[in-house]
Amino acid sequence: MVIKFAHVVAATGHPKGDAATLLAKRVNEEMNGTACMEVFPNSTLFDDDKVLEALLLGDVQLAAPSLSKFEAYTKKYRLYDLPFLFSDLSAVQTFNNSDTGKELLTVMEDVGYTGLGYWLSGMKQFSANKPLEVPSDANGLKFRIQTSDVAEAMISAMGASAQKLAFSEVYQALQTGVVDGQENSWSNIYTQKFFEVQDGITETNHAALAYLLVTSTEWLDGLEPEVRDQFLTIVNETTKAANDAVADTEAKNRQNILDSGSTIRELSDEQREQWVSTMKPVWDRFRDDVGQDVIDAAQASNP
Ligand code: LMR
Image (cartoon, rainbow, N blue to C red; front, top):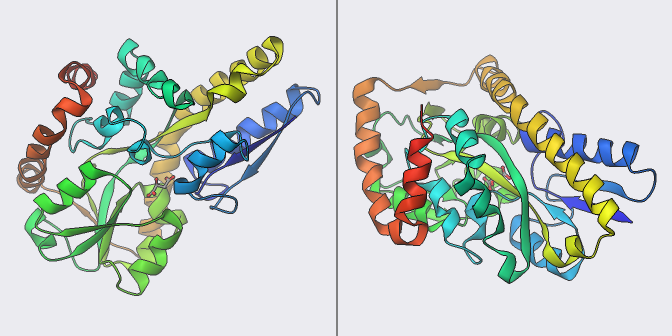
């Protein structure tokens, strides 16, 4: 059995690329030929729009799209895009490991998907083709966003406009001025070279970028019990190891951006307050989709 895993980021030096490589290595070494895994990084097999359909068709067995990319299947994951909800990556990790976080893994089973775990990526930062210090600096600019209605509302609260674009199109869209800016983790900004075609990056840490390691429920249920148990044990151990390594990878990629001569703007408390007060009102529009109980559980995870 060949397990195909398609994702959209760099194969190495990135939390998801490294986690996928580690998972494949363990499956290939430990499953004695009952199963082997092939990884397709960098959108070489499917982009995130197509990969979810491909899972149901059996063209691929594993994917790890960001939680912003499930809008068509559940509105619960809008939680992760609420600006300034999680204070840092460890809070996201605490929430994901909580009972509420674990329950969210199975909210799409009625439409055929099972979440096998959460893979963290990093906190999101803004970049643009001009300096962004306060939200009003973004007035009139156009930002690339993922397929997330929360992100769209957040960008509009900044007086800017949003364009949903596939990840593989972002570099060129920034380079040619189709969009002026974007939001992403340090690892994506570095490995996709977005910093090369932006004025600088503003360290807003305004939301978490995290992935759902997802498979088809039918495929998973169809595995022989011993094969499934062994596979899920490897998945769980890899998930833990990968998440433990994320902070380090993110710090390295932040440093790589600085070393390449790009500007990183840190916010003063006063500037940060302006970002928070501009963006946080967006929560009200999505509270009912997510559920106040889920928001409360997420907030309780902050240190
Ligand atoms: C994006 O589209 O910006 C991210 O979801 C890409 C990724 O997988 O990190």
